[in-house]
Image 1 (cartoon, rainbow, N blue to C red):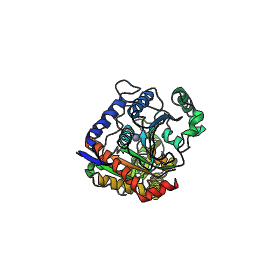
Image 2: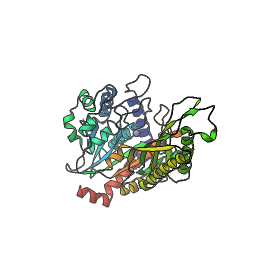
Image 3: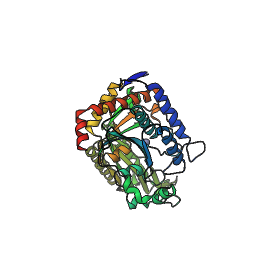
Image 4: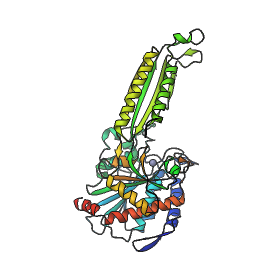
Amino acid sequence: MSGRIVFDGKACDVESLAMEVMARCQTLARFSEDAGSIRRTFLSPPMHDCHREITSWVAPLRANSRVDAAGNLRIVHPAATPDAPRLLIGSHLDTVPNAGAYDGILGVVLAITLLSAVRDRDLPFAIEVIGFSEEEGVRFDTPFIGSRALVGKLDDEILNRQDAQGISIREAIEKFGLNPAEIAQAAMREDVLGYIEFHIEQGPMLESAGLPLGAVEAIAGQSRLEFTFVGRANHAGTTPMNLRHDAVAAAAEWITTVERHAQNTSGLVATVGAIQAKPGATNVIAAEARLSLDVRHRSDEARNAAVDRFVRQAEDIATRRGLRARSNVLLDQSAVPMDPFLVTQVEQAIGHAGCEPYRMVSGAGHDAMILAAKVPAAMIFLRTPGGISHDPAESVEVGDVAKAIECGLHLLEQLASSSEFQRKIKHA
Ligand SMILES: [Zn+2]
């Protein structure tokens, strides 16, 4: 455990701050659309309660709170000078259905704690804490609604998308009491220095390395494809094995080649997560097999090479078996590197918090990926027990949260005194 650290000449009890952070995450977990489990989708009524609660925490600070037209909670703690640039720290406040208490939420609550810890400090930059309204993509099949607004990418096409009840994003915004005509004002200012996001890892890497914190250096790119093997249906009893054109057997052979290649390629993950057979009867050789493929890597070149290889292999297997193979790209999202300067600063802050610095790649998408298009961005991952997330069993250790707070305080201190960051401040 971390005990007390001296920050800005004052002793700071990080353990009790960490316990408060966890208790606050549990408090926000009570604001749910479902009784007995956590679900808080984009601008659902419980998001009002969530905003009200967080705003009450910052009321004693000299911070300004508002909810922008995209439903993001924005809390600005001013700097010594009124025209100082801003550092953004945040994560998302929405959840998946049957969620845990920490995915996204922890990053917002932790940022509030950092804000409180530096409240009497005249930093050379203002701090804006952002609780993004939407990251998970649950209600509208459209992720990152909140962060898209900050980078000016929440356009009419997206605003017109509808949920299962036929309510558009635009209507949801109005129903929440906000004005979609003011979306443009939700865009971040030109003088933003960077964006920092704390988030649970949602994977097993830190736990297996025995480390509480990781510096994310890139968010992996992602390809999603649909594959179809087309063979010929026939009787399962009367057709000899050498005269078959079995689409499921071809698909199965291909799946194992995909898995083997990913196992033997450093940093590559490839998943066939869905398979559908037609006609889909016990006594009929399948005429068609339709499969999904998800491929991720930090290097776009490596990811694209893997995708090309998987397409070729599907065609080769189909040809050898007298079938046809088709593929269709559904998503081709580039990898997003985090800002090298900020990553190095995060790494140093992790070291100053008494932890071994550890660099890692995020396999999942995050708001930082959207903001990185406009401003330098960095993420700090917290160890996730069992690698479990998007589940009520999602958890985090209080000692790890304490380390994250220490890391955050050191990071702010480093940035406030870094000559390189000062130059960025001057140019902002
Ligand atoms: Zn998240």
